[in-house]
Image (tube, rainbow, N blue to C red; front, side):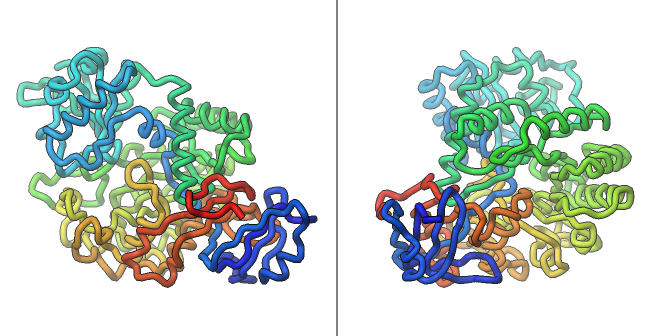
Amino acid sequence: MTPDLIVIDADIRTMDAACPRAEAIAMAAGRILRLGTSADILALGGRETQVIDGGDRLVLPGFQDAHVHLMDGGTDMVTAAPLWDVTDLAALQAAMAIHAASVALPIVIGTGWQPGLFGDNNLTAAVIDAVVGDRPAILYDSSYHNACLNSRALHLCGIGADTPDPPNGHFVRDAQGRATGMLHEDAIHHALQFLPALGPDDHLAGAMAGQAHANRHGITGITDPRVVDHNVAAYATLAARGALTLRVAGAALVTARDRVDTMLARLTALRATHAGPDFHIHSAKFFLDGVFENRTAAMLSPYADPPGGNADLMFPPDQIASLFTALDAARFQIHVHVIGDAAARAALDGFETALRANGPWPGLHQLAHLQSVDPADISRIAALGAMANIQPLWARFDPTVPDVALNMIGPARLPQTYAFRQMLDTGAPFCLSSDFAVSTLNPFEIIETAVTRQPAVRDGLTPAFLPDERLTVAEAVQGYTTHAAAACWRGHFTGRLTPGFSADLIVLDRDIFAVPHAAISETQVLLTLFKGRAVHRSAGFPRQ
């Protein structure tokens, strides 16, 4: 077969141990044909073959993000006021006022306010009412586990003094028992059923914005770890149109209201309807706890700060065992949000129960986040055939935003916080991911933090956070290529540059293996190919 596209004069790192380096690659019909020297590969070309000069630049397989809320984050990009960098209430109000005046949506949305700067103590409906009073408004924090409503939204939701908290959720109240507008965890989802919803066109625009954002950062495959009806509809629409510019695996949400029979029926139907090749439902998503920022992380012993206390698991252990066992038997991957060490242990116990009932198989059940893990449980990840799905960007001291979790974790448990090196040293399978829109989607910012345990120099200098837990650049790249492809169940045809695999590759403006670690976060993706087709090309990169 004559190649339709060739890249020559490049430093190609294939992530394939059988042929780790090459200087040229030939592609046809969306697949890789051959790798070799520039002369050998050029000799394969024909009259219609496009030739790209790599300019001795680093070429890698397309990156894959195995935990990214791509459609919802993209929807925020096109509908919501960005609050990530806001540092005081006046600036927050100004951002919301400008946004409300510029959008005609029936609900006003803000996203990204930082716990540690804002929270139950200072963000209320009255603060939002001062600038947005005519329409319902909801402002999500950076974790999306907290949100604040204005008074109009509180009224529409019917949240009053006598409204009981929903399961796994909490309405924050003042000293007189009145709802302040702040919502924790599933109180958000309770409220959303009463508020004006965005429409299918908004979600479709969000999915398209999200995938374009991902392509600009070299991402050609993802797992969206919480898909519900509107996510499924948008991804399915793009897939049907042939408009996906990356591959999407979906983890369908399971809640504590689910029973084994109804859950399996729903997920089995989703899997059958959305079976790929570019969009497939392959897993089930569980939130076993919340986050430290609103004191819903489940720990084995109480929080270490003066208020103390703890949080319950969001599923009882017997329900975890029955649901995990049923899903494992039906050959679904299980994707679990675990922040506290009690949640991590509960997930591992559930995996162990399923393994005993069903026997081993290469499902690579995902443990996402793993902020605090008891030392006794770290070796269980590998032993149970699970995978550590980690977000290294959080493993640093933030120079601007106080980390309220550290006081709750306390000094005795601090060494087990984002203990990634300990996990890898026990042989735990791992992948890197972003959790966008909770944090940046940029994999190079994340890789830099993985290897330094510090923020980028431009953001401000801080000491390294538990520097013994650093990864190497090579490990981080594995975490975004071969390992991430395995996590997404597409490691048999993506994640490596090898003949027969999908022609998904990226060209970078620097060699991230050779530059100083502090320069990795500045990396720019010059070209992203998905199935041999350019889905991102920087303005200065030549076409041929």
